[in-house]
Image 1 (tube, rainbow, N blue to C red):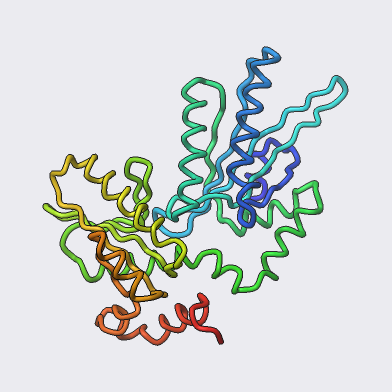
Image 2: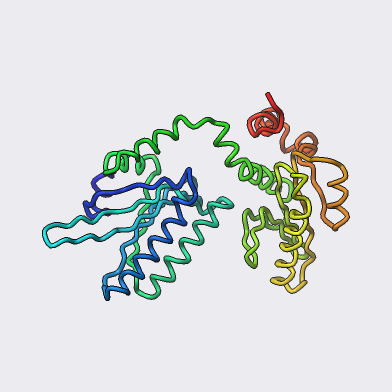
Length: 301
């Protein structure tokens, strides 16, 4: 596989930016660099297409992590000093924020490709194999510090970073198991609004906004957020289906806040109660409660 990656990188060196830890050094940096190179080519009258590689890292069927790469051409009269900037592990096609980043990058790439300004190649490669390859080939030693630091990163940091996504997946699993009729979808975009979970049948669309912790200072913001999503669905479906808004929370907060949300026509689902009561969670209840109460930080150890 290393020889194949050498071939895809045209035997040039690589410089790695780790998008898995810092968002700004991932897709935002990739897009800025790509658009900057396009403008430079226009400025200098260069007709050569910018070379872009998309590295797809499969997780499970239909779900992938992504790294992006751009060739920075530096051709001198005496040598070729070109190399690749690699934006490592900076997007996904299945998670909330990571999915947003992927769609943003893909939209820019597809637009430039339609204008014949970029040459794009997509390569599928296991993320760990790709990481090991980049460790060997990177010309900048700081890359090793970035990659190795992943192993030292406390589990708590990882869970804190992804607890919202983890909670969304648990709710999604519950909906799939408890609502066999109709369709259940995760992280759906409607009119620029991202909806965590949707259950849709012939007459009704239920939306589920998932909040692991209901922050007291963001109650109004949460209500407005849900109302925007209801409006977006009503617009798309032209009121042909009844839209039912639900807020799913684990760390509940005060009863007054719950009352305020319900007064706005939003159902509030206390997911702790669901776990205790629903037979779906019987076998995994203890393990799941440990994850939610301890590992994700609701109950102090």
